[in-house]
Amino acid sequence: MIESESEWFEFSCYLTAFLSASRSITFALQGYKKIEGFKEWYKAKQEIIKIDPIAKYFVEIRNESIHTGVVPIGGARYFDGKVEYRFDNNSLKLKDIVSTCRVQFIKLLEIVHDCYVTLGAEIDPQQYYTKEYFATLDLNIDDAEFEVWGWVMTSYIEEGMDEDDRWHELRGRVGECEINHLFKGYLNKVTPQPIIPDRIADFDFTDEERGWDYIPPGFESIEEYRKQFQKSNVGL
Image (tube, rainbow, N blue to C red; front, side):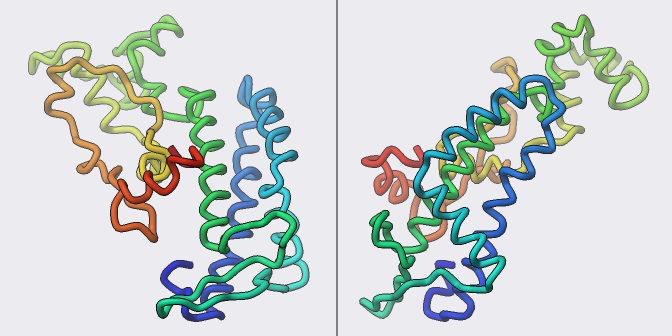
């Protein structure tokens, strides 16, 4: 939306896409409803969403946009060669559309991040394939390797790898959260990471190498973004 603000039609297309996709996030989370503890966690989040005026407003304009095709842009103002669109809602005293959508996006990110924290090993391979979690199952690295590879990696043992090395190597072969760059950029945090010895951490990938260093669109630096939001404590 930021890059298309000077083109009304293009901006309106991105806006309606955002409204539709943002509503789908909570629906997608319900795919975890069979996981133990999800229902209680999700119910608590629903109660928060229900009383959030901005969240309620986004549901309303999303439904109107999807079912009637009406684009919820109430007006615009021009300054310094830039365009700033606003929603047609004076009661909530909303800022411009981009800023308001950013706030809503951050709130949704907080929910998704908390899902990774709460459900942990149930949804995140990096939290599942750890020495600590497998110990709760009365299992060990041999069981984990057999689960992933189909056999115990005796070649690693012959190479002199210890248990921590083998766990670290195994986690490099399984999936991981693919939106940690968004978590770090907008929230200044990532999903819970496995505990690894310093000797391994010293040679592990940096956040930059992992692609986690991310500057939210509309800002020149991460410092500029955090400075803008530190007063409202949103996204930090």
